[in-house]
Image (cartoon, rainbow, N blue to C red; front, side):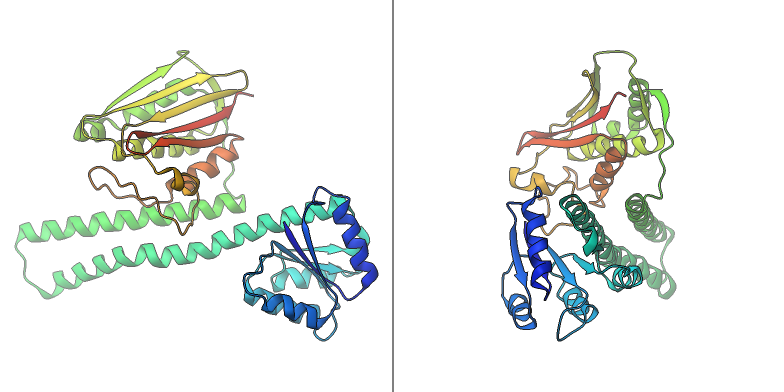
Length: 354
């Protein structure tokens, strides 16, 4: 980790350095800045990687808030304001101005330092996701809205027979449903991140629950001539989970498995128990995923797009797996994927039994 600390008080810099060295961050690279000139030199360096910035509120030349404004525009890393004793109002103003967190100097110790860094990095990631939500909304929603608007103008300006009208209505309906689905998913992501989606936990038979979810895909599997087989080491496995939210996860995995399976293929579902977990597995015989792309699969926003495509061109919002991961994590579980390109993919969910 690269830590940039900006403070014109050499004694404070020495104290900060000592706390870094006494913490689990001892191997981190610490860049110390004690003047305007050295600060500007660091900021002007191309390719300088900085993971987190600690900024004293009383830097010379410019106020801490002026520096905060400059750093926010550069968008280099999360910023933590270093405040003096009794500076709670200043700290609140710093958070409002864009700081990820603040740390009073009198509370500076290895534990508080590490805790503050973890909190700031987490808030930084959440902020990046929320900013990206605006980008994905503008990008992903523009095309279907343009299609709907275009066909609406056509219906108004042209004369069509009933067959043509029916086809246009179906296109408008399909695109509208896609938009609604996308908006609902984006709202879900925001609510989960803000902690406003409480889990409604019940104790239910997880095997029976899976059978009900599978039954909902009867028409979809028949259309694509895909078979779903369920294997389990026990007919009943009772587990604590939110059935509505877990339905979203299981349905998304099965839906993807059908989309990426070849016609006439078989999807294998397994529910097994270990000492501490219930393990649910979905395995398809589709095109698989390139090894280099696996790490990006559950990321909501990534510059790297997974190149695998549904076998019959089925559409997808591309954000379902990110929601799955968030819901599984809310349950205290883990989700992972294993895949061999050209041979299919396996998604594995581990949920705690306690």
